[in-house]
Length: 477
Image 1 (tube, rainbow, N blue to C red):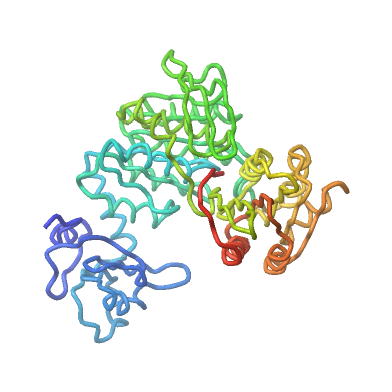
Image 2: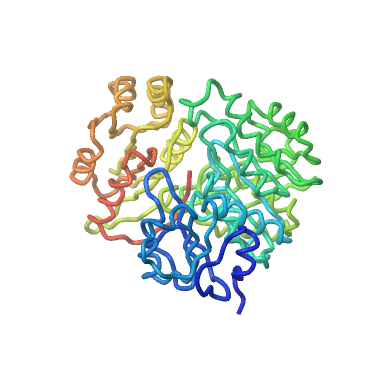
């Protein structure tokens, strides 16, 4: 049997104590009792809101073959009888297991961080590298203090490419994560005003992102956006961390992976890339200049990880976005249709502007409208009023005449928009949902963009429930 981990290796890696008759090995690892599969180990992590130990019985009922539990929680498990590995702390044990997974792996490892585009870039890397070998990558946005070690611990020994997303909300959070991942290639997509409530400036955000270089292995690479005002800061930080090779991407003529020319289309794009003295035409299966820029970072990272450049470029044409990140839905409205662009997963000022540009480039049929449905950008702190009001400029420049908004911070945008823009404002997202269901019409192109915590995904779901779908395709922000 080709186990993910044998029980003996689990015990050794986590310094655990066996209880009961342990299985020979496990097929996978889960921290969610609801979605665990038969033959997997359940790690009873104690989080901020729930304690996994309270769900150990459910995990067993759903097929868990092994429990990993904390010594101090044994009394609370009562009469539960099951194979267990008892450890001092479950999260710390998961971290030790993740480090053991990295130690045993011969994979080329790529780590991605940045203010925007992390998940996009990670998924693009997964897509272009999958035809070239066995790929293991973060699920969704598993990029924090438990998501990174969980992703590492799930990495099979026979992996050719490991792709990890690394995120942060505060300084000092990336440092321990990158030292677990130990990437051969570290990518910083961009620096933008995300989590501004926790930082004084963009330079502070860049310095926190630069912690990723501290884990890069000897002889490794950094891939940086040369168009970013913080490029020099990041370049110096990479050098100070001992990164052997520093590479750049972007539209600047000095970029090693250069965007020479870009042509946007409603459902894709074409870029001309300058790489190694060659100018190459590259088709991308998603619209947006920002996608093209991230694609150059993907090409750079994949090439530096040993992938065949021509095969990587060919694969970009078939990439597609994910739910909440620019996925386009064609919804039937009578004999016609409307287009729904789902950008409801997350938002900050930079990704908002990119989404507005995406809506600008959409081409509704005669009589159709471009409608921006926007919710609050969270974690903006004292800058919230300023950054929300500032969205008026790109909206006007894009010629978007219909703006429907919800949330207390979006009131600042309402007040900043000129009279020629038709504005519908509701304080509550659910009230805007009711309005949108009644007001959309055939021919409209509707884009929903917000931070995840606002609940604007409910607007997307309500529209999907109300109208049958023809297809799902398109771009991502």
